[in-house]
Structures are given as C-alpha cells and as structure tokens.
Amino acid sequence: VLSSFTHMSLKDSQAEQFLKLTAKFYKLLARISKSQIAPKGYKQFIPGLKFQKMAEVTCRMLTAPLYNFVFTLQEE
Image (cartoon, rainbow, N blue to C red; front, side, top):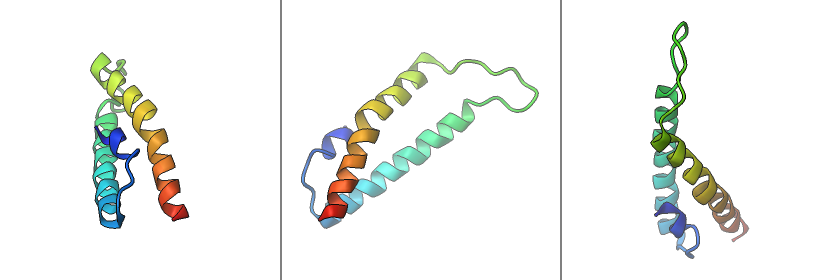
C-alpha cells in the first residue's frame, strides 16, 4: 500500500506525513529484524518465510520507489 503513494504527486504536508509514516514502518521493520537475530551463544535459525517475504517485498516494492520519491521532492 505504501508503495502506491510513492507514485502520487503529494503536496508538502501530505508528503511529510507519508515520509513520517514510512519512517515508522522502517523502524518497526528494524525492530522485527533485530528480534530475528539470536543472542550470543545461541543457535541462529533462518527467519520464517513470512518475514523473508515481507523483507523482500519491502525492498523491491517500497525502498527503490521511495528513494525516487524523495529525490523528486528534493528537486522541487
């Protein structure tokens, strides 16, 4: 859903709100990623398929378009 917003021409306040929401999403993703890492001395297991899929989809469908969105905002 968030990736569809990157293709819209949002006004200043809308773009700011979108970037705040996206930043919250990435912070949550970072917390989830940290929770997948085993503590020192414990065996590391491969993350579940749902987590892997979410990370892959986020990287492919949101991160690259988000960079283009921010670049476009900075040009204006």
